[in-house]
Figure 1 (cartoon, rainbow, N blue to C red):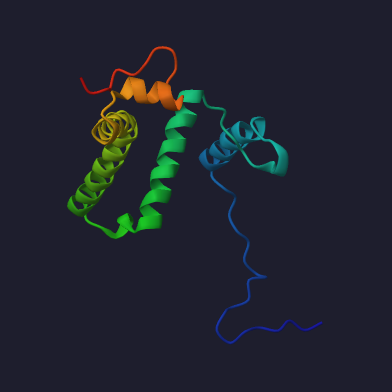
Figure 2: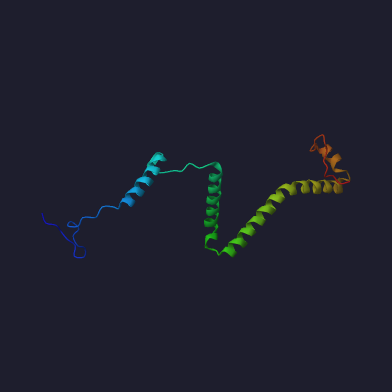
Length: 141
């Protein structure tokens, strides 16, 4: 049987590779045994971590997704700081509005009812049946 050789690569049948050094064998044995003890379905390795570390990893993953989705990963650190500051300010104002706006809305609604009907907000609320037994502290005086 004749062996076909490529013009560019020499035949490797005559060469014998030298044995691996002892240090390399020791490292391979040490790390292969550590990996085999923590395997799960699929043959992949997994380190078991505490909940705090899992939470930190989850936050990092979500920040990475945020950076990739909105293109922050291509910005300089200064540009990222400005963009993240803008996002945080908008989220803070939204949260503030969700807590503050309903009470402001009720106060302005009762003021409007007082202007239209001449009755206080408590009287009008009791008339319409929208207030409970405690009344409302946002009524105009």
